[in-house]
Length: 241
Image 1 (cartoon, rainbow, N blue to C red):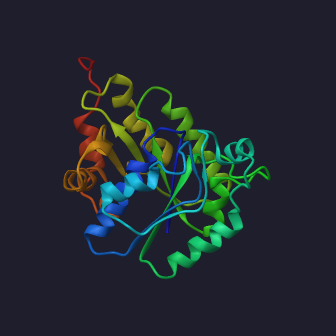
Image 2: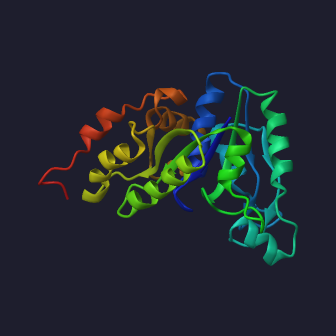
């Protein structure tokens, strides 16, 4: 079981979740993907699970609650006058799924401390109650080091196990800050990067996406990403832009 969270919204959690699911499914594992709360989409619109299903070719998809406003789950439920996600119930449902699947991926909402309800239950609480490791998806650009450090510190404070740090969207032409951040991100995590997925991967067809996922995720997730080689290839020099 794996909970996928990010340092903030828009970092590439959905694409990273799809990449892990794609590699697992390709090697024949039974994979379920769960979204406890989807916000910012209407009743008949495609949410994150639809994108994951298209990219990864996985159909075992479970959305527990949906709110139309693009807010945190707690705020979106409150604004819509709807009951919030019942996190203990969600934990029970995910645990039930995990009993019959080789891998269950749970995509959070926003960052680690985003609230599901007005009682203050967060993505971190979800991971802790599930006993799941956490895959942290981060930005590559300026400002990511502080966001990543704060998230990792919050995880350590709560006793959560880090499954790895993945850059959710690595551009074709990284700037100096991005190149410099590679080594610092590894220092913060106290381990090599677990992957770097290419920018625009969400627009690929499933076959192309599987190739990108294999290149962009480390062997622990079934890929071929080599953190040292990636870091050395993109190491900043005085001539780097």
